[in-house]
Image 1 (cartoon, rainbow, N blue to C red):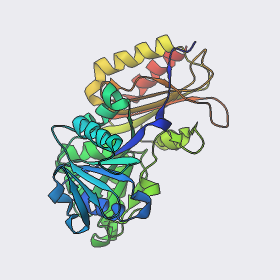
Image 2 (image 1 turned 30 degrees about the horizontal axis):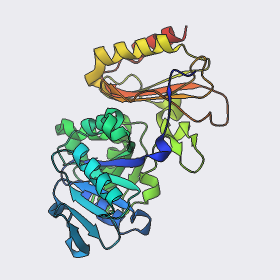
Image 3 (image 1 turned 120 degrees about the horizontal axis):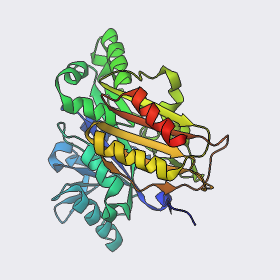
Image 4 (image 1 turned 60 degrees about the horizontal axis):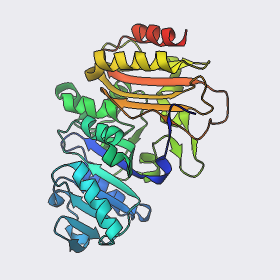
Length: 337
């Protein structure tokens, strides 16, 4: 019998977080996305309905807090917290008072730290029963983004924790400035693809579906999910600010040793661990085990459906502040000994 629960991601509703600093174009991006037919079965959670400026497309209001748009999308304001809002949306969907939705997009405020939302989606049992984290999308203003990254810790955190980075207003910035911003983003987050939004337009397929599974195949797409691992030695591994460290091993790992190392890492460096992702070959398990955490909060390790094509290999990517790559590599090697 396995030590780990089977992953049930395919049966849960994906939730993506859209974050970004003040004025970086989150609302414009959402407006463009919600006009696309492929996004018509979305529910959008915002702080204030008025901020998203969708009133010209309203069809009806449902109990004041939820509106149904002409595209079929649902838009609602955060109630007391995101957990309550998600559960309320699900109850209304099951009761048939709002249309069915296949995904949820949560827009944060410009000064928000997205980590608590990610933690909610990783570890809250009431949320995990019906929802799963898909992608964290961060918008970055090409004109002011470099300045904001230099002055505001919130902006740095939003970029470092993201699965996808969207550079907005690139047409308004000098070409050289955009190139400099790309290099800064890549240094902060080597793993996330960097996309440019033309007038707020980005293909939804490039933004979402960042979770571990290809829903059509039920096989984990490890390289895509752990995209930093694919960069290998090109990562800025010894940067003493925010950087990424990639760890790999080609033989099965002992779970007792590994889980003890992870527990010590969370206890000692939790505030500095911005994002941890791993797909692991654990001794005695026929399928890979996924681990995923933010700061000290980790999703329960889950057993995936099977290995993708190719040799089995454990890989873990850590993005954090002031990480000592040599120390992490030594701890990783000790668990593999």
